[in-house]
Length: 298
Image (cartoon, one colour):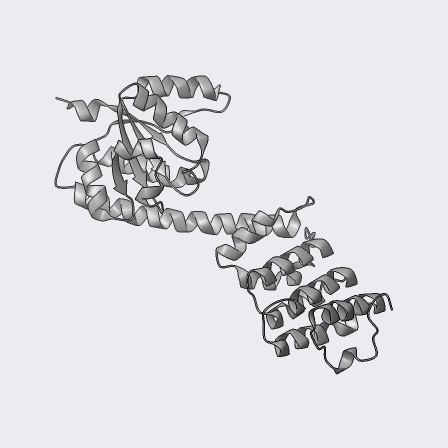
């Protein structure tokens, strides 16, 4: 005889980015004895009117699992789907992945909570949502490992997508794309970005290279490492902006002076004059190469 818990249908709420993790969750739930789930990626077909189908699934399902990740924690749809189940007094579960407990939407903190980085926490969740059994510990171990693997693959895919966009997009690339690559540890790839300029679909315009160099400099990348990238920009005004930004920075004077010297021959006379004027304004002494260049306006 099928138990009440096994007969329930569970709605899996997640961000589109987290679909691979949600699919892992669905598979493990099935192995744990949950026979029926609703996962939009599997249960919505091309051509479906998605909003009526989602409303129907919310009505038909008996419980909700919210897969709470940094990509989903502040999304309106996350709280809207949870509120539908809460208002209907249906059971709700929150599975956190790289989200601290205190970051959970306050009304949701009454839901049963589990941390997808903790095997013990996942065991307690499986015991609650599915059939209690000797296999739940093994299933929890598999789930934690498979989720970690899925997240690693997701991050790699996102990096490839962002880099492809940065290199090839015919439109302006938002600073958020560059910042995301910096924050996820791809500084070296960005420092070598100019090396990809000859790729068939590349669209590495001077302004794009300038933006990358500027954000790298703002993030604390040393000016010496920036020299090849900045030298490749091919626009004296943009290069002058970056020289001035470095001069106004907090690196040792010898490093700032070396950066200015490295860019000296690439700057027009007017650009050099503007650099001298900026150096005078901040009381910075440039190297010997700059002697004889009057400040701009004199």
